[in-house]
Length: 383
Image (cartoon, rainbow, N blue to C red):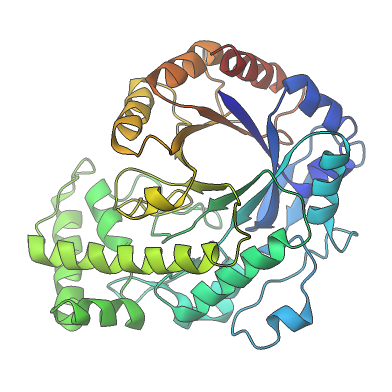
């Protein structure tokens, strides 16, 4: 299995011994975040402090005026870092150390832009805006994502380009002091994740549906499911034709976003897409569209929860995706509870069909969790 480790620019540049640890891990590549959402990131290897507070989504390459001057949306720079090109500097440092570097690019997850531009953010059937979620149906979002990607990779030697949030985000989100956990049944969360912005409504109309009617049906079904009080409900009673029209509209927008992004990458770039087999999934790893697998080199599934369901998901992906598309397993060594036997888990994922192991996270995992990463990497390389 190929091993890809994830890191932030400050991990590579400021944490003593980062390249030596990555080499010891025998990482086949290190994915550096070049565009990332807001976060408070622990820095257990740092000698200067315990965390980096990234107050808002930021672009870790130079924001060139000539590239962004005529764009409706443009990224912000990270004033919490001193280097003007911390992402590029991290990539170059890895290359100099003989460690291949990948570009890790987060696209539609940007609360700062969503707050400043609510018209391009996801809007649910009650008219509530999700500022963290930029809607792929909006042309300005697609142009922003395409320009962001082109500028991220400009002038860098990269082994891969890894696309996160290349599609819609929804209601489930780790927001400020999150107080929605455990409130919505899966069926409710799915319906509240349907974007009802003007661009998505136009897509429904093009498919023969009345947008106001769909919004009302969504609101009515959400109310019915909430009143039922069953947090295990997974099915709704929307008409199949309505459900199909909503999904087709979402997938068309997701395809348009991905196409705009891929058109701005150099020919021959290795494309890795974070995704999910369930087409209704929203978030950092959104549901794959029928066209997506044919346009990328690898699809990465989130397998953070160890167990048979994750192994089965990998097997299902290997059976469904074209043979030329590698299946990647995204696992974490920084969850609240360690994976009981991470070597055995990685081995099972590999036997199920995973050809790539994506390790989260080479900066967040401190001395206490680093042995887990080493064990996972050793298991992957032994397959």
